[in-house]
Structure formats: structure tokens, C-alpha cells
Image 1 (cartoon, rainbow, N blue to C red):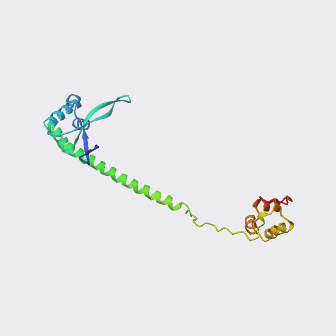
Image 2 (cartoon, rainbow, N blue to C red):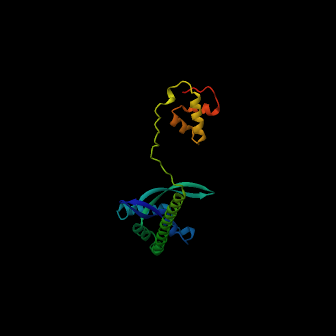
Image 3 (cartoon, helix red, strand yellow):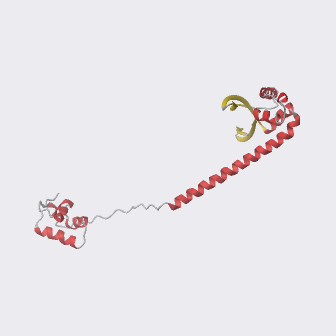
Amino acid sequence: MNELINNGSKEQTMSSKDIVILLNEGKPVEQRVRHDNVKRTMERLADREVISFTPMEEMIEVGKGAKREISVYHVTEDHSYIVVAQLSPEFTAALVKEWRRLKGENEELKMMVVAQGKKIDQLTELILNKLPAVEFKTDVPEVTPKKKGSKAGRRHLNDEDIKTIFALKGRGKTQYTIVNETGFSLSSVQRVLRGDRDHLLK
């Protein structure tokens, strides 16, 4: 069974090859219907505007894994009954059963697709729930203004400056806090804490 888009809606179709397989079921070789004969019948019916069909190309196996492309005609359910009635009326009942089977398979396939979609949604939700929450900080840290009398203008640090740095360090202040509170450059504070006596401000 195949699907084609007809007048904006999906409609199930059956190919001329499918009709041949149905008509030849249980028949001896000498009584079997040929595919080209079925296509000619369909063409005559189409010329009389009794049916319409859609030509398509399909691949078939021709033995030992080899394949070749053949031309087939696709018709709707109603038109397939007309074709079979022209070729072998006794197979009309078999055609009805075949359509029921094909429709059942199509409905089962649709249910499988829906179930698979729900499963994917559940897995996606499970994965998203296990991901750690990401917080975006929008607040900007407040910059502590430098105290008046900043020593940034000095070329060298004196002993009082060095004592101030060590005193702040001793109270658990970080290098960046010392920079904010004293106005010294970061490199100067680092030099002092390393014991470098050449304490030049940047």
C-alpha cells in the first residue's frame, strides 16, 4: 500500500503490480495475468474516463539480488475495484479483504508513530529535568570608590604603606580588597606581599 496526495488530502492507493500479485495468487503459471496486460486495461479505462491513475517508478527484484526499475500505475480503492472487475470479477471479494488488511496495517503504523512520538517527548522531558539549573547574574558588583588621599600618585611606597598592606593582609583581606581600600596598584600590593623591596606603582 502506498499513499499519494490527491486534492490536498492523503489517500491510500494500490499499484498495478499489487493487483497482479493479487490476481495471480494460487493460479498456475499458464493462467497468470501479466503486468503489462493489467496496465493496458487501466489505460483503456482511463481513456474512457472511468478511472484515473498516477504513473510511478518502482524497483523490483529480478533474481540473484539484481533489481530493475519498472513503471507502475497507482489507483485509489474505488478504481481498483473497477480494474479487478474488468480483469477477474471473481477476485473482487479477495480485493476487499486485501484493502481491509492494508488499512489495518496503515492504522497500526499510525499508532506506532504516535506512541514513538510520546516516548520521545517523555525522554526529552526527563533529560531536561535532570539538567542543572543555570542562573544568570544580572546584578553588577558595586565598585568601592578609592579613599581620599589615594597613594596612586606616589612613585614609591614608603614603610607606612608597606605596614598598611601587611596589616590588611593580616586581617584576612584579599589582594583586591587591599587595592580598593588603599588605592595602590595590584602589582604594587603583590610585590609587597612577595617581599620585593622595589615597590613601584603602575
